[in-house]
Image (tube, rainbow, N blue to C red; front, side):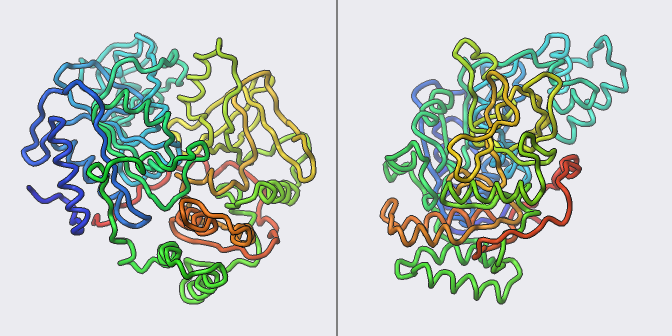
Amino acid sequence: MSHPALALSEDQAAAHDRIAAFLAEAGVDLETETLAPPREGTSRLLAVTGKAGSGKTLLLAEICRALGNAGVETVSGDWEGRRRRDRRTLAVLAPTNKAASVLRNRGVPATTIHRILYTPVYDPHYEKIADWLAGNGERPEVGGLSEAALDRAAAFYARHASIPGALMAAGLRGSDFITGWKRREEPLDIGLVDEASMLDAKQLEDLQEIFPALILFGDPAQLAPVNAPGGMVFDSLPDERKLHLRRVHRQAADNPILDLAHALADPALDFEGFEALVRQAAARDERVVWGERVEVDLMARSPVLVWRNATRIRLIDAFRRVHEAPGDALLPGEPLICDGIELPLKHRQKRLDLEARGLIKGAQVIWLGPGKKPGFSRMHVVGAEDPQVSAASIVRIEKPGEEEPFIPYAAGMGATFLHGAAVTIHKAQGSQWETVQVFAPDLFAAARAGRTEAGQPLWKRLAYVAITRAEGRLIWVVRNRLARPSEPLGVADLAARPARLRLEGEA
């Protein structure tokens, strides 16, 4: 077959050819760039697995590019346009906003699973603009919007291909053009799912109802979901439906963080031996730091990763005390983690709205201030394409030695939040940060406990997941100490858009 645009390694090229054959069976020929009409029938499944650095993201991006060249249209959770019987579509999915934003920053048009399960309902008055931007209609005349506003919308869409972003560039708010959300009723076509190690059986079942062709990309060395005692969803697939990437491509760039992560595969390596490797890496490369204390300035945007819940609570309490946060309120800039939505069944539509806006369990948010209504909070949802949200919120801040948390903000019902200055390694899966602090005393406690998971010492799985959350720098914190902040908490940094990162292998 024709060579992909990016130079792939031998194992990546073999996986690419196997995926191409899988898609050809579904009626999409990547070699001739021809499409057959969608085929109805049961969902077909393929999994691509590999450890960090094996090139899964690069392969996913290449498959996404090849599908686009063949004429397959990418569907996001924002807008789908008019359905055509012969149209072939693609959705690139991730379990969390942060995981989806990692892909988007690498040029892959990803969205969350929730944004595909739930579709927006547009106001007909503004739906004409969306149709025009998507190339399905003439330039409209819309009361209340000037020609200059439409020009701004068109310019934004040309750069970012986001219908909501374009409408907001025209001067509208999300509540102006999206009137609600509904559960998807009609199936889609091809789905690529990143961070598939985070999926549970119910999520996979939902996706298989929607996508006749589904390709999962996951890391078998990570921790299985808490509610999935049987392991990861791809573990039970037959061998002919699984591809494994073995070569660690990013090690060619001499990445000491990945060297440490892959050293954990040595069955003879114990915790003391691993810490010796961390010391050696820190001595020769600034990307690894042997930390004598937790850097509090990083905790506002990059949480400390821990194993024990008690450690998490102590670190959060220390973070708030060192910032002189009041005992009955939050400071703008404090990080939170969405812990779910507390709404009765009769408010199903409101639940859909909150989840579609990014407030799903595990979502990272930054508290901006109180909302206009009692019990409401203004928040920035980290990684969401439209991050500014005001929602009824229940914020619980746990305190060391106290059974009941204090609740600085409490609506009668709505999205619930815990503090996010420190999080468990389980909850950190799917996320990445430029700098990651790992609280080593917790991993030592896991090693002393002697627990195993899927035949491997638990501390090694925890260490692997924690280390591979770091994109650029790893701080291995060895003491229970906290630095003083260099500046007060704030939200000025949230106005800047992240720069697009290059894919490995791109010029």
